[in-house]
Image (cartoon, rainbow, N blue to C red; front, side):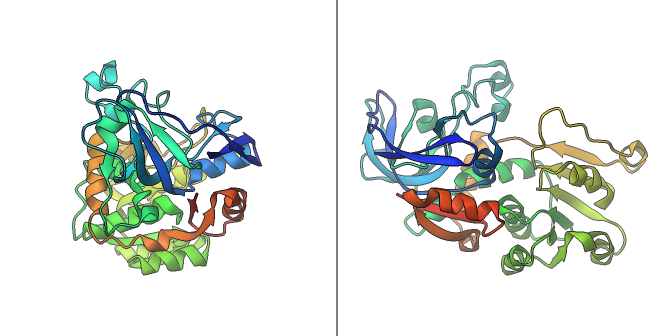
Length: 337
């Protein structure tokens, strides 16, 4: 089979490798669609600590089961499926506390290699995070299960209602997924970004107001009547945006820091605002099996997901798709082996 290898930043090579054979509890999936994401792009541009080089990469996918190992009961060859690339071990200290997204082994046992013709899923993923794909859902849209699960996790525990106003900073795929969920909960949503093309996409997805980042402060005052947003979602992973995000929340508001910033980065906040305005800052990482099930349920509803897929490429054209993303062209691309 063909598999995409990231050799070093900026260099991708397709290699012919053996098709894996599923062992006990494993499932072999023939990839029908794999999506690009921000993590893939970071790895392509400058490397990523979670993606060893040289090595396979890509982790948002859906497909058809090609073969199953012994003792797999819920799935069989020919089933159309969707999955995420990780699952908790259920035995470590954090899993015993039910903090499954913080599992000590979740990153070391994850599965990469969706930019390929096949991917082999281990038993812990098969048991917890593999699902049958609804017939009405396209393979490319089904591959959004993983990023949507992350967004669902970040919103878990938030009581977003119809009278609330949310600010989303960032118009990449994650920002747009936040927009879809905020609107589904009935809140009004304003989204800020730097490119009109993505802002126009946000408008099509239901944003109540779109604004260039440079005009954010003035526009937010109009949008909220001077109070500030009930919920602020930081979706850029840029330090200056992390630090500025608290300035956009109302008193008693909540700021969700979704975008990952480089390790050892230090953010500085106005302690007066945090204390006397009783702000809540919430970091968020990964997802739990419960979040994945919730995201799966959302994907079974008529969410308008097609605007997130900017185009389709063959597996051989993976470098072209990554190059376009590096230039800010498009949102996500589907790789079709």
